[in-house]
Length: 266
Picture (cartoon, rainbow, N blue to C red):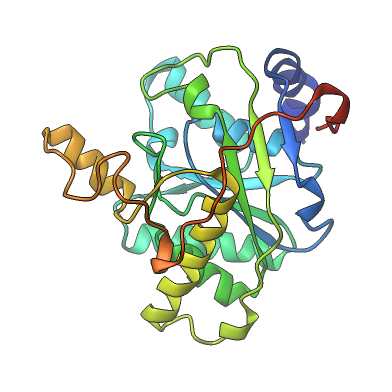
């Protein structure tokens, strides 16, 4: 109930009015049944705008820190995250991350939509980073289709360090579902997990038009924090690369549709 109140009555209408989000490919989200929505991650507001353009309820996992803040702001944030069904995850890995994935598996078995950011954290510079294999495990264990998604413009509206997004159009591009049933029962094979993850990241790259970097986003963030330059070949504008050594797709960053061609969202 809280989810739909926020979307239909309180937050949703305001976001529609101010940011005028556009969506392309909404028909690719299954009308029923469990599905994994795998998105690039450019800004905190990704978790607001993606659910906004869908007709079905979408639940994400979120970093543990959202649930442990102190003071009025911390309690409000934690309350909001719980109210919209966000599942806390300890990004340090181990048993806590395993528990979060198991919770996602139950969500899929119940026929719901489960959102995940395969990069594991926000991109530090707008590029697409190496996916973590947890999403592949989830896909193979659940048998659910994976729907690739590209968020467009959220990093420009809300760059790292900015709390209130600037007013501009936000886009969501949704690709055709990916079926990995051919790998069912192979969720403990690390090579299969990497291949599946790379296929998902390639699909996201093909939708978003982002430059790809074959390192983890968390690793790049740590390098930036330490003041270390990127390794050779990883600087912005370096030789093009794509997940799994595939050919680099010939795509551009999507742009908003013309007003007359624009589908309604929400």
